[in-house]
Structure formats: C-alpha cells, structure tokens
Length: 84
Image (cartoon, rainbow, N blue to C red; front, side, top):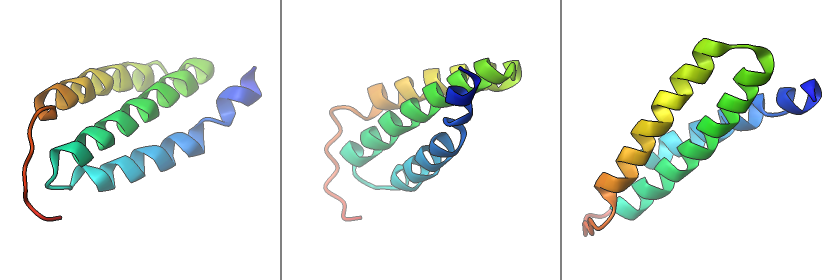
C-alpha cells in the first residue's frame, strides 16, 4: 500500500502545475476546468500525505480543496467573451 501512495507524488505535482497554468485563463469555463484539475491534485496530495503521515500537507490540501470548490461555484455561469 505504501508503494501506491508513493506513486501519487509526481502525478499530483504535474496536475497541480498544469492546473495553475489554466487558472490564468480569461475564460470562466477554462478556470472551472483548472479548479477541477486542482481538486484532483488536492485529493492526490491528501492521499499521499495520509500514506506518509504528512498531516500538515493533508490539512493544507483539505483547505485548498474547499477553496477550489468555491472557485468553481464563483466561476460557473460566467461567460466572459475575452480572448485568451
């Protein structure tokens, strides 16, 4: 089981980094996609931190997950017509 948790670290980092790139979009639908990717990354970090006993990382990502859900709610329904 420990090996499974170890496999999450690098994909979680890559997903979080890619999502942060998308976060800079002027289009609400792309930002919602970025928030969704960040949630996936948060869940992966939580699992990795849980398996490694990194409780501060678990707590941080639980808080970030809540903020990312808030970001989705605030961006849904906004249809900005600005170009990227």
